[in-house]
Each structure stands twice: as structure tokens, then as C-alpha cells.
Amino acid sequence: MSKVCQITGKKAMTGNNVSHSKRRTKRKFKVNVFNRKFYWPEEDTWIRLTVSASGLRTINRIGLDAAIKKAAQKGYLTEIKAL
Image 1 (cartoon, rainbow, N blue to C red):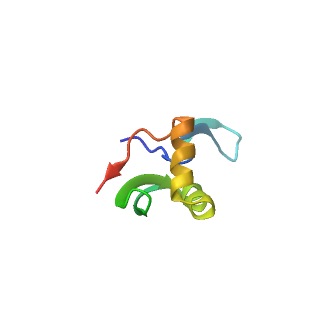
Image 2 (image 1 turned 90 degrees about the vertical axis):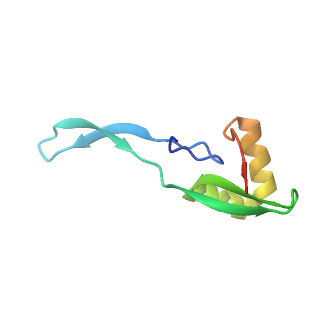
């Protein structure tokens, strides 16, 4: 599975490694994502999401239900794995 946050939609970006002599080679900036289980009280179930660190902060700030609705509206949330 690709490393994409299901809440914020963050994914890997490309850029350059720049050496001391200013020589540039391509590199990838990977995303800080991990799998987490959340209890969703509105649905009374546990779900598993792949979230980034900023996605976790978003869930803590606005709540799980609002974050899931916003992600589904923007098209970031493809599927929710119920446990």
C-alpha cells in the first residue's frame, strides 16, 4: 500500500539532494505515516486508519467524526477498515 495519509492526503514528494559541490541528484521526501486504531463512537466501532503526524493533530483538534467527513468530502478517504 502506498504511503498516503487518509485524513490529510499527504504523500511523498520529490526533490533534490544537494551536495557540498552543489551537484543535484533526485530524492524522495517520505511522509511520516503510521497505522492507528481509533474508536469511532458515532458508529460504535473500532477503525484502522493510515494517518500522518499532522493527521493525528487534526483528529485531536476537530474530532474523529468531523475529520473523517472532511477527508471523505475531499476524496482522501478511500476505505475505512472496521475491526
